[in-house]
Image (tube, rainbow, N blue to C red; front, side, top):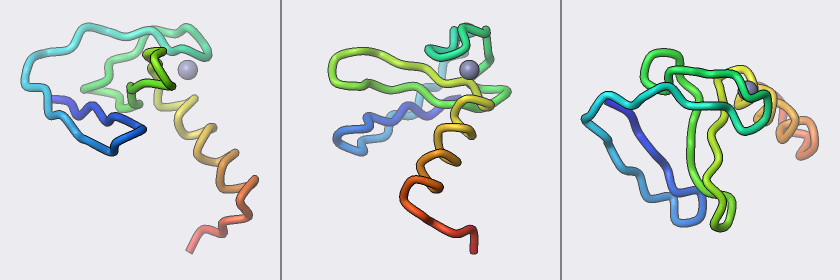
Amino acid sequence: MAKIINIHSGEEVIVEKKIPKMECTICESQFDLEGEGGTTGYFGMLMVAFCPFCLSSILDMGRQMLDIKDE
Ligand SMILES: [Zn+2]
């Protein structure tokens, strides 16, 4: 089972089928969305997929840019 989130509407879709390995849009590594984590969605009309490492890095960069402290 995996959860796919539309980043524009926030709508979540639960997918029951086994999802094949995905390629990260940033680092091009293959990752298992269901087993390893990461996320996928759309930037405008472009489908994007982020492996757990790149997703964590994106979120960390966002926190730094917005000056959000971990608490
Ligand atoms: Zn990646």
